[in-house]
Image (tube, rainbow, N blue to C red; front, side):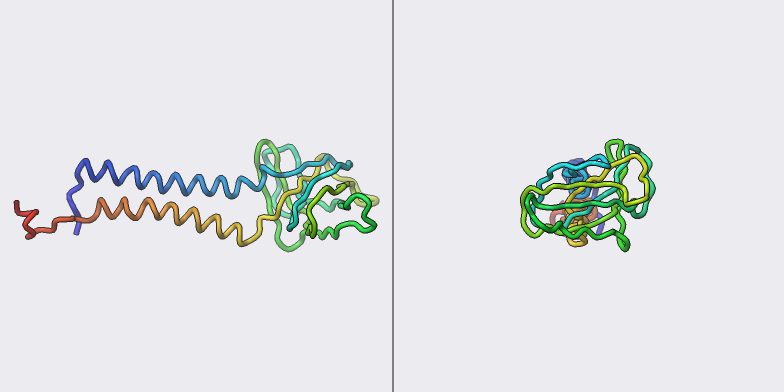
Length: 186
């Protein structure tokens, strides 16, 4: 049964609902936006030392542009090796799942993935494949988003929104004192 919408009910319900929606937006922005904050960049051709933790990583082809094309980035020869290591880390071309981002005047498309077994400093070099040229740009390397992180971020944001909207709507839509009760009559 719908209750009378009093100023007190509005004063409680509206901030609850706004907090839920605000939490939803904040969690999505922090969860998904964090992907591009921690990228390590390298102009191509070039090389530099980068530090990686254990885990899966994505290599993005990045250009200075607000408008990037979606889909896999161009093929780039990327070599990653621990200093003094005889064999480089296996880098695999991204062909099945392509990811894309646009932020801070940069656009990136995934072009490769790799896994680091042991965290530490690695020498990273990148260049055009033999006999090919690349457009002006570079690579950006960051932790792979992963389907579990993506789903967790989205579900957490939805739960935050529901945590504000459901009680707010309940406060506005219910009547604590239905007709016929002693409180409603008096």
